[in-house]
Image 1 (cartoon, rainbow, N blue to C red):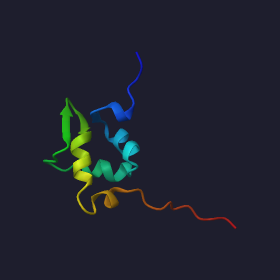
Image 2: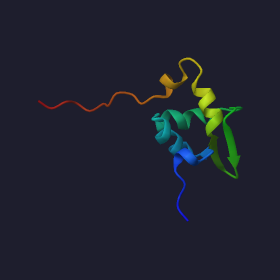
Image 3: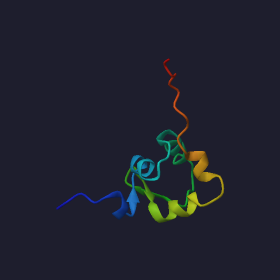
Amino acid sequence: MHKPTLEGKDFLTVIETAEFFGLSRRKLFRLVEEKNLPFMAMYGTRKLIIKDEFIKYLQKPGVKEGLANGKPRTKKRF
């Protein structure tokens, strides 16, 4: 039996969601701490994200940009 790909999963962990959508893990962890989010599902103590509902949430104006990765802080060497 093989491990399912992220495209085939209906429920994703926070880290899988960040990886799949190219979002900041830190910002996503802060987001899931909020109450009454339509895309959250609890499985015991695990927080899972319902992929279809999260896609709808990302379609709201400005949401995806707010969760995107920032610019790297590293300095350029000459």
